[in-house]
Image (tube, rainbow, N blue to C red; front, top):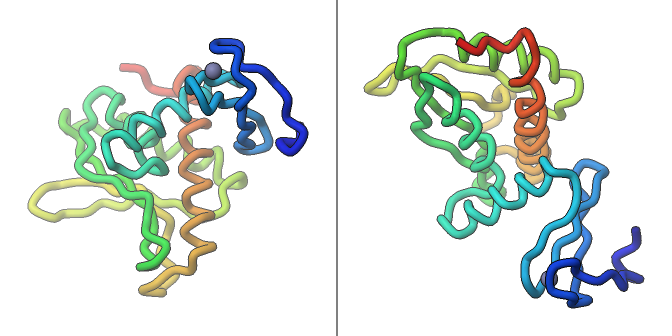
Length: 178
Ligand SMILES: [Zn+2]
């Protein structure tokens, strides 16, 4: 689909201002008048989460993944960031285990292992202690204090991919439910 020759009509309001966005090789059509979204269900959910993040003034890159992790039983988000291109800081999602059990760490660890080959960065789950016991999901540090814009963008693409894979994985038999 070529956006230049786009003459599609919005199914919701009938307007012709429909923009096509490519995400991971798939397409979502977004009406610029009424905001109606069409495309794969999980990508529509992703864009809706990004809109919500935009409205809240938080990172659209890390918010969907942070919401997913917050939704895991026994887990509470304590911070997240989509990184900063100018400052060269990388994205992260930090959480604590409110129920003091390790099952969600096992789920996330197993998921990261399975999707490792698909990700651009090498992600790790790190134990941190800063007034409280917590865990941080972030790309492994390569020793540099400041990361390049390309590294930050690659990590942001990974955040989307991790979110999509986790949504699939949580329905699979190995994912610990309770
Ligand atoms: Zn519309």
